[in-house]
Length: 240
Image 1 (cartoon, rainbow, N blue to C red):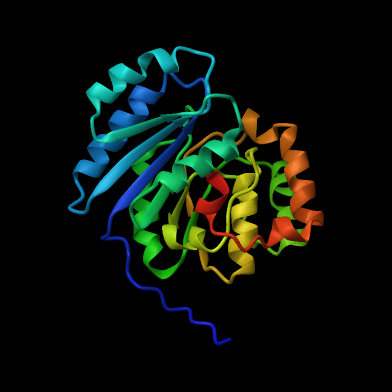
Image 2: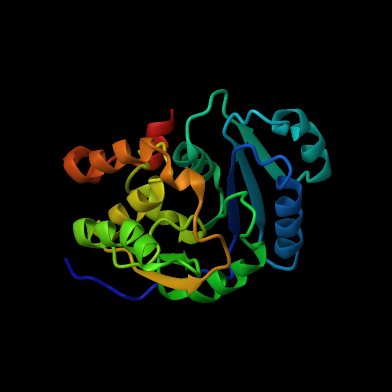
């Protein structure tokens, strides 16, 4: 098979912003409003998809208010708490546009950073965010196992802020329910020769839910189960 490094320009096309949320009622209005204003400046169509992973705060009670305030945003709620990766998968499956920008509802990340992602996407399939301030131990814990065992050559494989060509998800599905989904995506995309780039992103060096104990189970499945590494089904099939 002959590999091509040329990619069709895509930055001028439609964009879906996917925001997995869990107990983020206090922050979500600020994040959605920021993206609403940012996307209004683009000439291409866009959408915002918020996936509430059965939060135990007042998120559910405020969904009606938010839907009326931002009619162009789509709010999806899981009936039970499934995990960050499951919320990410739901959001991506509901995305309609050629580009998908994933952004967590967590304090410290800046919606305005999307501009640098859009500037880099035309030549690659995935633009990965790189958080500042991570020490050597955090790099080893996050990046070294992924680089060594999975061949993923990015410096912050668990950063949840990324821009994707949505077409990469047509060839496989996201199986991790935990935040390990971010590593899984890179591993499968790398296996299928997707091109990746990195840009700096503002955000916290440590995120508690990235260390969800269930992430270890997902990691073991990815490392040791061949059917998990290269599931041939398209993403949509796994969510029916």
